Length: 78
Image (cartoon, rainbow, N blue to C red):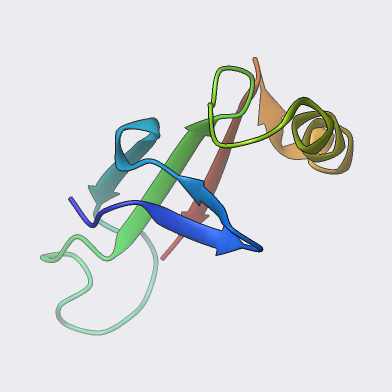
């Protein structure tokens, strides 16, 4: 869809490990908010990702623990 995601310091998440989902955003926002997919959800399985070393993975799991479900981190923006 958009290619690999370069995080920093040479850490690159391959495109195939990223799951994108687009949907309509809820709430106020003007005339076009209910007709366009203005909400995006990005999901990455940290446990099985080949992009991270084991020490990087453990650090991510520790720091993002409150955002992780079954080893998967999801970021939502609208």
